[in-house]
Image (cartoon, rainbow, N blue to C red; front, side, top):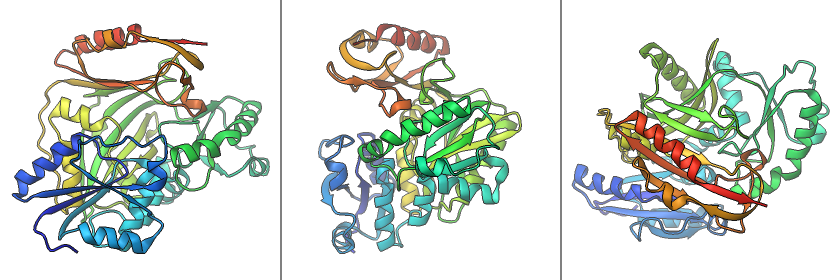
Length: 426
């Protein structure tokens, strides 16, 4: 280890611009210099997921072979200090974080078993259901079309949800209303699941879960668990899915903060969140937990050992909470700063085209950016790209963050953005 008195920050695969502010805040808190590094796997560097340098050189990028323990031991030993935080924001890089923690178990991070269990939906379901079966829907794991035809499907109650074990962002998630529909769905997904896994650097081997369809409203909670297994909860976020809004897919159509839950409902959601986090063995980590509020109580959809998408921005806008800073504190062995005060309404959103096909024209983006509530609005598609629904393994085309003291104005702006942005598909 380096004998420097500085703080070392090690991110895996991706370092977003907001992390720079979090690192600068650490400087003020501890009165120490901060040296920031981004360890990027060769696989991620060569993938479509790679974002390039988002921090204007603040993070020093090092290309690594995470499957070479001696190389990783040498790289990390040369940059780490007595106060080192190692973490990962991207789902695809969690397994690489586990490889570092295996070599350096003194770092404040979950062990590789907990990280794998958290990112493989089958292992996650097994771990939670063993301790807390009331939190899980009924499910059947399937690794191939051939295996699917050997399972006992007589006990399935329709509709069911089919989802990949090791992908995120609701990719390839489909709802089936009958046995015939499920047969077709399983065959269709297994035709492309390996391709999507490779593109997204999915966790583990391709496989599917067939789950009981849960009826209720979707929420998410980001929470912190320290090295002593004490849990700290951030306010819950209401998540509107595409399907709930009448369009294709179960992706996050919209995030709403604050949400309208009673104190008792929030407490019970927090209890379910804590049980899930501890069941998969998390410690010294942030967790992003997705839940359904059903007529029979809270059910866990899934969880990840990382900050949720858009949560840094919407928690900062709504409550002044620096989520990235708190995550770094956890990985330095410190407790998060839970001081918060409601400031304004905030929302994250994703937009897909109404149809699949080739994008011929994109309009309305510049006009949409002028809406009063817009904090951030990103177009991630161009003319000539393909529009593919999330249920078929595609990415959203537009995403962004809105915030406003007036809830009414935020809703007006959200509607205006969706009305303005158009994709001509052929």
